[in-house]
Each structure stands twice: as structure tokens, then as C-alpha cells.
Image (cartoon, rainbow, N blue to C red):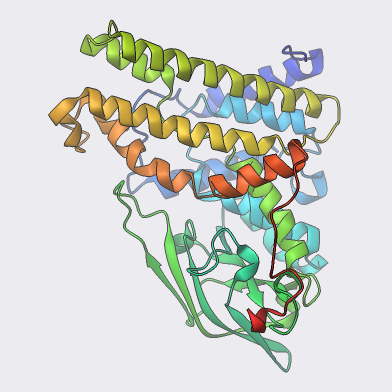
Length: 395
């Protein structure tokens, strides 16, 4: 394992850092600003990155990328994370949806959608989860029925991040209920502004509204907007899900350093029980850091990282929840205050505590990721599946 940049990587890091320093302010500790100007700033920053070939570094130049290496993308992400970069609205579209369009879409799809998404002109969402099919994505019930050159879609999705401000989405539907559940799915591009699409934001405990319910009522989608062959939607979805697992591998929010600083200011750093927990958090953070270094080393050698990427989200999401819970308990009766103007540390621990359970669901629940680690890292046998060879209509 080599922790050092190669000369070429060091040169790119310096270029990236100089570019970021020219356009952005350094990130300040505390709660990030998400005021009314955030979306405007996000679109402007996305366009600046695209114009300078920093938006999607590994994409080929013909797609608006730089034709760079995965390690260069890692370096860019590391450097950009140190600045006040408004990137949230485009993470799903450029990290998950548009790569799926590039992999399975026709040339006219790539011509129509890729550049606009890359430059921040259009925003995308991912429409997979349903009330009765969350972790079991293949158990979805939203149906698409062929009608001439169109497909008519009816159903419901839930937990769709950013649907309320998205222009397009990739939509996984059931087109054949008379085959096993993984074989009767088909993926489409859907216009989120279609009158048959209704978006209802979900008011979260954290105060945010990132997640949404989305209802489809007789939405007509041209067959030309299908991604992949009919019935092959699971194959398409796997590409999206693998990109998703990598995209949500880490967790924003307070870490051991922030709670240690707060404990020092609060005068509780001398508490032996707290110091023991602090040591555990530090060790876990260092273990995760070294696991990421392993992935980065593989990328720098041109290798493909393995399923150990699933480890990251399990560790960091639970880590975040534990740290914030301890911080709120440390504040005693003041811990119930969630007003950033009145709560200690700008209420960052309260907000992150409320957000952490959602992070443990997004991008695959803890249970799903543990199964991936058990089967693909440890080589343990798969869970028994009694529905494997039954038609979905019989379940």
C-alpha cells in the first residue's frame, strides 16, 4: 500500500487545488449553508467545473470529461471536499443516473442528456425504492404496460432524493409479472415534469426535505426512452446500484475530531468513559481511512476495487449516529434544542443525529451491505431464497 502521490498525481493535485482556490472559499466548520441561493450557486459551480473539464474527470473527452484516471477523480474529490463547494444537487445524476444513460442509452440519448447534466442545466433523480420494495428492489410493483410505441406507467416510488427539483429520472418498472421478479423489469428515462408525475416531499426529523414520494398516473413514456432491452432492467439497475454504493460510501457530519473539540470546550474530556469511546471512534476512523487507501492504491494501479467498498457506509453511518448521540447526551437538557442560533455547536450534532438513520438506509441498508460483505468478501453461502424461481405474480 502506497500512501504517496506519484509525480503525475502530485502535479494533478496541485492543479486541482489551484483551480479550487481561485473559485471557492475554504470550508468552515459547522452547518453548511443551504439558503435560497444554494441551487443557483450549485448550477454556476457545476458549469465552471464542466467548462474546465473537472466535472467528471474519468469520462471520455467526447462526453465532456477529461479522459482521466479514477485516481485523479479521487484526488479531485479529496481536494474539493476542503472547500465550500455546492455539489449536492448533482451527486445522484452524475454519479448514478447519467452513467447508466451512457452505458445503455442510444446515441441520441447521450447527445440530448449528457452535456446538459454535466453543465448543471438539468438535474436527475433515481426512482427505484417503493413502499413494499425497499432493500428488495426486484420486488417493486410499479408497472409499465406497452401501448403501441409507448409504455403507460402507474405506481409509486418513495425515498427519491431530490425528486422535487429534478428534470429527469431513471425509472425501474415491472413489465412482465409472469416471470421471476428479477427477469420482468425494464428501465426508462422519465420526464419529471410530465403532468402524470406527482412529487410529494417528505418532511424529515432533521428538518430537511431531501426525500420524496413520487406517484405515476398513466404516464406515457416513448419506447425510444427505454434503457436496455425489455425484461433486462435488473442488469441495467445493477450498474446504477454499483455506482450508488461507491457514491454514498462516506458520510458527511461530525467525526471524532469534532466531538473531541466540543468535549474539550465543555469540560468533559477528562471523563474516563467518554475517553474510552473517543478511542474507539478514532480507531474505527483510522481503519476506514486505511481501507480507503487500499481502494485508492488499487485505482492508482489501474485495478478495480472489490466489494470492500460496502464496508465504508456501514462503518461511517453507524459511527456518525453514535458520535452525535453521545454529543447530545453530553449536552444534557440543552440537547433537545435544535435551533442553530441557540444550541451548542450550531446544532450540528442534533441535525446529524436526526439525519444518520436515513444514511443507514440510502444506498443499501446495513443488512444488505452486510450480506454483500458476507458473500463476496468472506465467501459465506447466500441466504436461502424461496422466491428465486417463482413468477412474481405468484408471490
